[in-house]
Image (cartoon, rainbow, N blue to C red; front, top):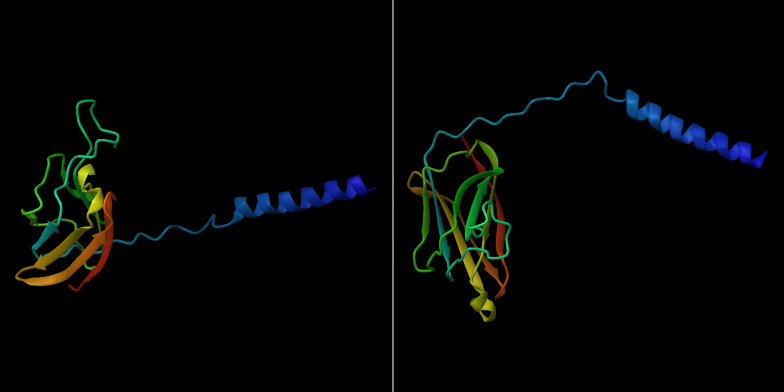
Length: 158
């Protein structure tokens, strides 16, 4: 009798869960949401306190390649990537940044300092310009030997 009760309870629970999963949201359609692109011209400048080198430990796209030294993504789309060594005294300038939309945007940056710089702190400064004025200016500090990675959320009006 107890075994029959346990089997009935299991069938009721999992049968109810199965029916719920099959029947929920059948008539609902996903709402498409798209943000209008911004028509302004943007420029992104990246300053680093250390040189950036290709990542020797990343999985390359081709066998001869090394990983990127820096990679910049805007709203999930790659806008800049470099596989070359980048000196710390020279800023990286990305002119006419595409993909910025009205509303909230997300900028992700990933950079790889040299392995030799494990005893120094590193900083990465991001400055986004719209026309002639600054949209944002952020500085991130990292312990020596760490991969530099940051996400910046910013909002664009019209």
